[in-house]
Image 1: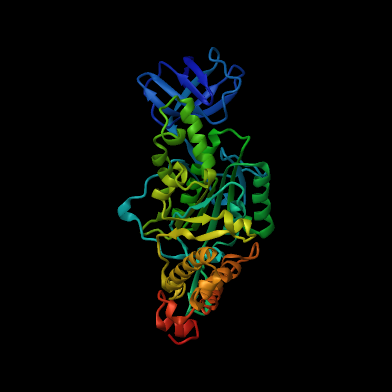
Image 2: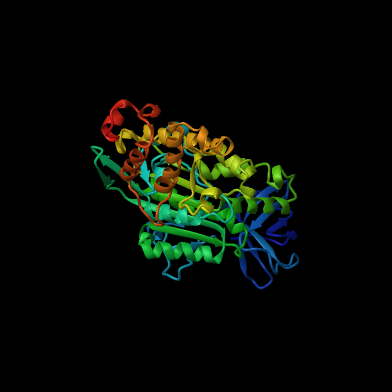
Length: 464
């Protein structure tokens, strides 16, 4: 039987302070009953002696400290998960949002998950094809990796996220000539935090129109939903992802957008707790908090499934040194940069290879033997082409050599033919590599220092 406490001292924002409590644990679930008998749920954020700070999931509007009561349930917050959740839409509290039938959970799991034993982790190497050349051919996404997308306000990261969710597939290349999709179960968990109503509608419509909804579970918290849900939502999404990956042997891709809204929610909750702020007002423990989310990606030895993460964040003022992208970069294995200059040129997707990085190399046996060398050559040649274009503005084109002019032409064609794709175009890795070799033919063979002579003869149809 629940023991109800009538010792609520203070209500501040989404926080409730309760005195004279005993045997209360961190992250324990709490029920708050208001004067009308309505029940609201929350979790314990902090315990000091006989005082507990509780965070409510649905806000504190209408709570009266004199008449409200609190009961501690003695367990952490658990989320009922099931394979039937694929094809459905949920809110930030894990409640069904699409008006469909109720789902009978197959298991109830702690939303905070359990750390993966480092000794049991398997190194990621299996290629995931996204259909976007600048990712697949130069900064490949692999199973079990956490590869964030760094964007800015007003850039089309929502469209890129939806496209990746719709097109992502595990593939292998047979004899370097044809692509075969892996005969395995693949699922996408899409978690949107603090998005506008239009963005929420865009995501659900795009999933339904392309048929991707059948293998996807969508969690949406809009800007006018309770801020506490933004902290809970990614944990619910990852809990479902872990269940599908490690209990149902599925390969799961979790896309989380926008992590900036998540961090802002952390800052607001921290301020309401009157904690000492860190950089830019964010809590000093934000690094640890982000790590508890990102480190849930991975592969486990002896398990067939995998959990891959693509967090998306908008950098305030396009500042890479801002605490959110800065800390994210330390925890994750690279980053994909969405570029404002390319966007203003009308290039989609405006992903800038310079500054983008994937620290985990893809298994060449699963793609094609030249993928790493071609990616390195494209990056080096494009960087040199941009540098020469800037130099030409100062010295004039008359001061350039024929090789310099070739680099400028390569940079222009690279942006038009390789970076730029039609919206919704699902370009295979073999198509991306073929376009890359066509572009490299613009440059003299002696400039192709990142690819071997054997690759040049085999794929470039030239003699080194």
